[in-house]
Length: 129
Image (tube, rainbow, N blue to C red; front, side, top):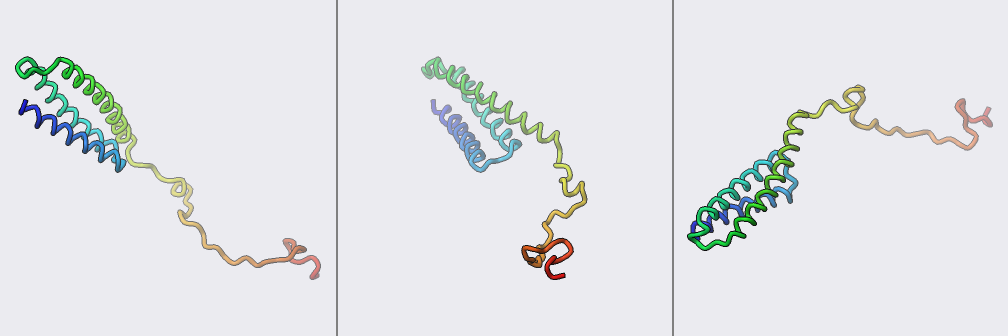
């Protein structure tokens, strides 16, 4: 059983790395790698439990629980890594609309507008003529 504790601690450590990445909104590439590392730690735990269950008196339900959890991890890994691959295929973002149209990306400076009266038209004040 002493050999199982380091395996469990490693899986917990890798799980905490995934949680930290999630909290800081890490990209799908990083999340894919972290989930893959966690998956490997789970596999090591499952193999240990399967090979030492009789000798260590580990109930078969434990192996079943670990396998069920690992299936969830694999599903999550496929989804996250699929998103990461889609983002890589898209490549860098294309030119913006402003670049395509050749317009400035900043707003023009505001100029003072001459205030007119109620009777102003395009040609000036109609009453002033």
